[in-house]
Length: 90
Picture 1 (spheres, rainbow, N blue to C red):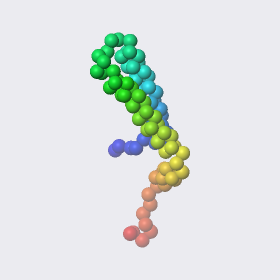
Picture 2: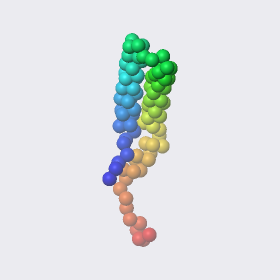
Picture 3: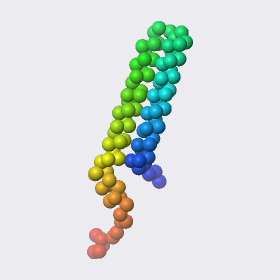
């Protein structure tokens, strides 16, 4: 059975992904600047190296908001309650 990650796990994954994306994109941008990259490729590298960390930061902000969402907290509490049968068998 597949379980959904908790908001804390989602936040941790999003934080690690954002940091990794920023490091990899910075390294790629530096490599493209230091190694003579084809001039046609440079605009694409720049757009990708700026866009990926921005998208990761957007997902991180959504993950952080989910941790502080009171409705999500209530849903987690309700999901933790045990299921019971109706007293009249409905």
